[in-house]
Image (tube, rainbow, N blue to C red):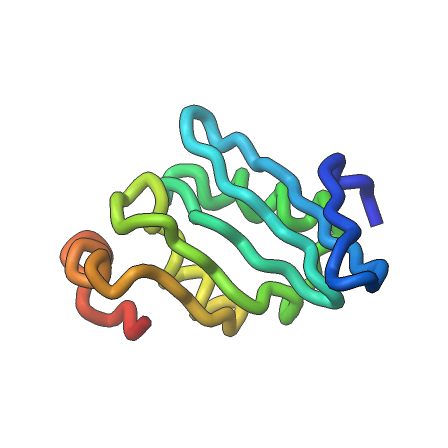
Length: 114
């Protein structure tokens, strides 16, 4: 497993390791959190950066089925454009604040099904 750089090793006395990697997609950052045996992706970037994002996932050892959750910090397209695509391709769940759901549906279409 590649070194993500940032580590948090505290959980009520346990030695639980979580690794966080910033993924720069040219003006927009996404964050990939390695937690246990899976990954959590925070934000997904513009559609035009999809190939770059997927290359970064592979680079850190991601395999299909490892992406457990996509967290969208808000509904702007620079954060949410790839959410539905990644959900469908990798069977990941999507989490976001309910007040942003309308914005995401307007941008991506009503099929987002959060």
